[in-house]
Amino acid sequence: MEQNKTGKYLKYAIGEIILVVIGILLALQINNWNTNRLERNEEQQILKSLKDDFEETSTNLDETIKKQTRVVEYCRQLISEMRRGNTEIDLNTLGEYIYRGAFSYWRIEPVNGTYDAMIGSGKTGIIQNQNLVQLLAKFSAEVKFGFEDETMAVALATALVDKSSHYATKLFPEVLHGYFNWEEQSMSESEKLMVIEQHMNNETFLGNLITKFGLEQNRLDYQNAIKELTNNILAELNEELAK
Image (tube, rainbow, N blue to C red; front, side, top):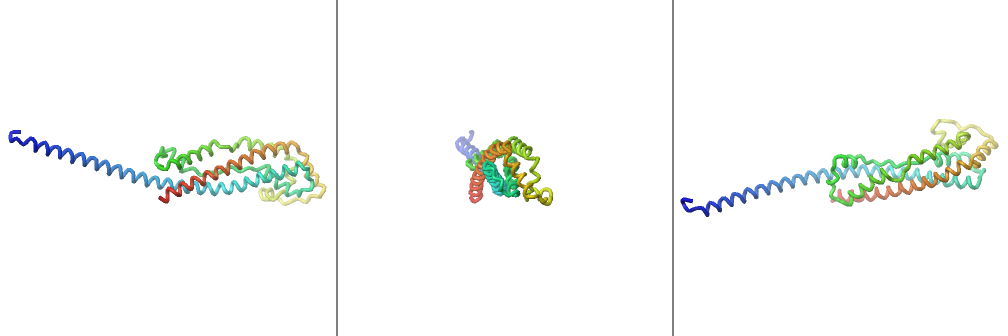
C-alpha cells in the first residue's frame, strides 16, 4: 500500500484463489471419475454374476417345466380314465399316472444368491439400467410370494396317497421299481383287474385328483410366467454386458 501497488497485489491474490479453486475442482473431478470407474467395474462384475445365476435358473426352469407338464398331463389322463371307468387300462400305465402324476409336483429352483447379496449390501443402486432393476425386483417378489402353495400341494398329495395306500403298492410302475429296487411280482389277470377296479371306483381319490389337477395347472402357468420373466432379465443382462 505504501508503494501504491494495491491493484497488482489484489490481482495476484485473486489469481492464487482461482488456481486453488481450479485445483480443488480438478481433484474432485478426478476423485469422482475414479469412484465412478470403480462402481462401473463393480457393476460389471455383479451383472456377470447375475447372468450366471439366471442362466442356471433358466436351465432349472426348463427341467422343472418339463416334469411339471408331465404331472399335469398324467393327472389329466388319469381323470379321464377314472371318469370313463376304464378297467382295460394297463396296470403299469395306471401306476405311471398315479406315481408320476397324482403323487407328484415340481417346484421351481431359482438361483438368486447374487441378487440377495446385492440387496443385503444395499448395492441395488449400482445398476444403472432401471428397467433391469425393476425386472429383478419383480422376479424376487414373484418367487417369494408367487403361486406355488407348498402347504396345499403337500396336503393333496398326502390325501391321494392315503386314499390309495391299500392297493398302490400293487401297481408296480417303473418309477417304483427304481425307488426301491423291487422286482415286479407275478399277478394273475384277475388280481390285476381287481386292483384296477379298486382304483376306478375310488371316488374320493378322483375328487382330490380333480382339485390337484387345477392346482398343478396353475403351478405350471406360474412356472411358464417365471420362465418368460427370466428370459427378459437375461436379455437385459446381455444387452448391458455388451455395451
